[in-house]
Length: 270
Image (cartoon, rainbow, N blue to C red):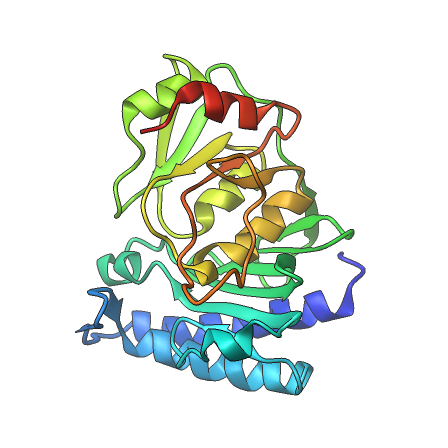
């Protein structure tokens, strides 16, 4: 079991949010379309309510950035050294498709880096949790044992995790990074990072926009499992960088012993 009381509390909070999501998932539900053309359901809002109330009890003075809450301006956020970064339901498109590939993401960010992260898959009840210096952990069910997880050395052939609903990186780009014989594993939401963290895939290359709340919790899990999340210049992905909450394109990797910045330069990404 992780020796980190706050991490365990946040894990329990994620499970409560997951229960609220599943209450909606088991019924008929309406789907709204937000201004950015992404879907919104009652499950997103129910999970947001549970998480906001729970985090306010755990750390009453810490601010929170969440997909389903109004965002404070950069002039205020720029002074934050520590805050919560939350996606109450990552993968709403997968939720609407009822394929089970959606998650609850809760991260604690300090000085631009995620130092605690929890990722819950409500349908399977799998919980991934990590805190800086305490490793990455996997709990298969609420009353189950905790298992320490770690990434693997780059497989031959490598396995590339890819997005289920947003399209993947081009075949040419992946061939430049991994060689001709890589295999593709399509999966929704932040579960792609978790697949790498538990040694079942090797990379996830994201071309196209994601938001900071999509990646922070899973980045912490992957880094504590031995991997890395790099922008396409080879630098670690950071948070609260400016007015925009959109991430740069990135590469998540399991085998951090490989010189991925060099591979990215040699790939000459378009």
